[in-house]
Length: 260
Image 1 (cartoon, rainbow, N blue to C red):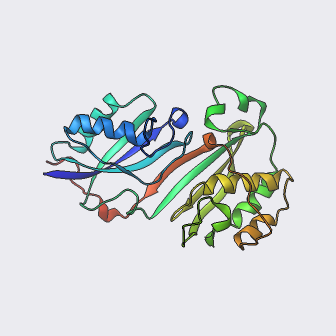
Image 2: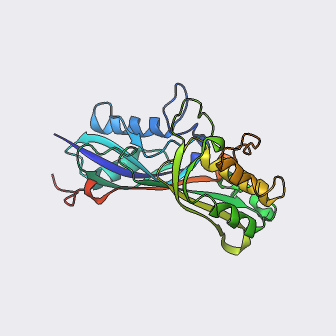
Image 3: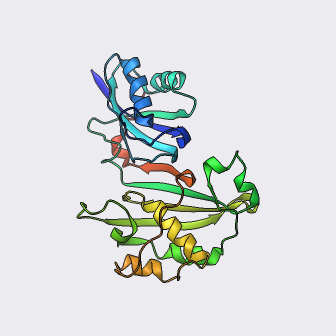
C-alpha cells in the first residue's frame, strides 16, 4: 500500500536553476526526486504548490508525493533531511487523503519580496537573499500602490508568457509593504488564489519604479485596466523573492499521521 504525503520544504535558490526538472541542470525537484527514489526503491514524482525560477528561495514550499506506506511522516522527514543537500531542508511531513495534489488542491499561495535599502544590502551575506537596492524608498508611495492590487484583476499586462493563457485573472487577498528591522529595507507580502509567471517580481519592480519617480503613480492602475499605452517594468531580481506558504482545506489532512 501507498500513502500520499505533503512536505513543507525550505531551500536556498542561489545554486538552483529553478524548481522544475530540466536536462543537465540542478533543480530542487530533481534533488528531491532523486532522494525519494533512493529511499523508496522506485521513481517518485513530486508536485509543488508553485514553480520558482532560478535564484528564488522558499521558506515553506508545499510538495506532494505518493510513497510506500512503510514511510510514516516523521520517519520520512528525518530520512529526507539526512540525504538532501545542505541548501534544502524539510520542515515537516503530513499524511493527506488520497488525491491530494500540492498545486491543484491549494486555496491560496503567499510570497514575500525583500529589498535592502541601506548600504549594507550589498554585503555578500545579504545580497544573495534580497534585492540590494541601496537607496531609500518612499513608503507611502509603495503603500498606495499595493492597496490597488487587492481583489480580482486581469494581470495580463503584468506578467510574461501570457499569450497562450486565456485566463490571466488572479484574486489578491493580501497586498502590503512592511518595514524591515533596524531600517534595513522593506518587504512586500502578497497572497492570492493563483499567480502568473513572474507576476510578483514584475509587480514589485513596477511599484518600486513609481516610488523612485521613474514612472507616474497612475501607471499601475492603468496596467490593471489593460491600457495598451503603458508597459510594466522588467522583473525585479529573483534573489529577493521567497515562496512562503500554500494553504489547503483541513479536509485533506489525516489526523492519525504516524499510524501504519
